[in-house]
Image (cartoon, rainbow, N blue to C red):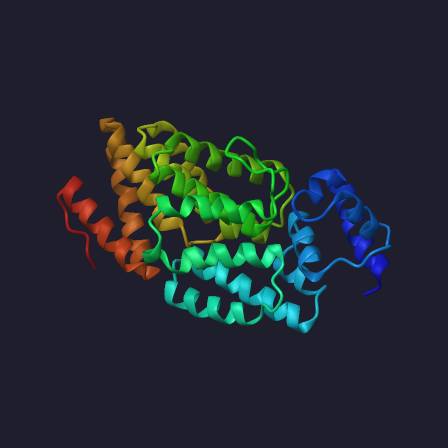
Length: 305
């Protein structure tokens, strides 16, 4: 693909979405460098091109169509790795991470960021949730150098979204509950206010809504927890993406019970049943065991199949 076409793709999409060069370039390259790329005066590295396209909302398949076979292999491995982590398929994630590392010869900041993220996520026993906080922040600053807890980047790649989600999780267990919830609300607003490829949104948005509804419940903000759980459930049902559906139904049931309104118990019972049966169908064994115990404790019935 000619240099000018790379630049044209980036510039036309950026202008279509109403972003400035400063917003798009932040943490990836300098504004003059982006300007030269857009004007066809400079060839972007594959890593920079990939990340710019992700921030501009292109899907995984669309990004792949612009890169060569070696870059495609690395990109595809990272995509599969991200999915395995989200699905908590840790044996597969560990195997994919080892393959991914073999594809990296001269690591860029983007490569380094991915390596730190997946090193932590594929070896959970080596890091407590609280111990993950600073390494995850350091990884995010490789591409978002201005990042602080009170600063939210204007544009994000998918790895950056996962990093912020996991920073929020780490904050919650490091006694930073308010920071955690604020970060997750920030991601929720990001999905609502930016043009992101719908297929890619659905891979991470339910995870963010699950964590947000869970933490709102744990700090006794039950009404908000119920609202966010219900939103996540609607998204999963409408799109047919079921990975987080059982967990969201359980969050809904738990918050309804904790709110203590007798009128909620019928809905809570149905939600808990759905959580259990979905977990069984999706082979989420540990979750199914938890939901069965919850149902027995709260409703006095054994719903095991």
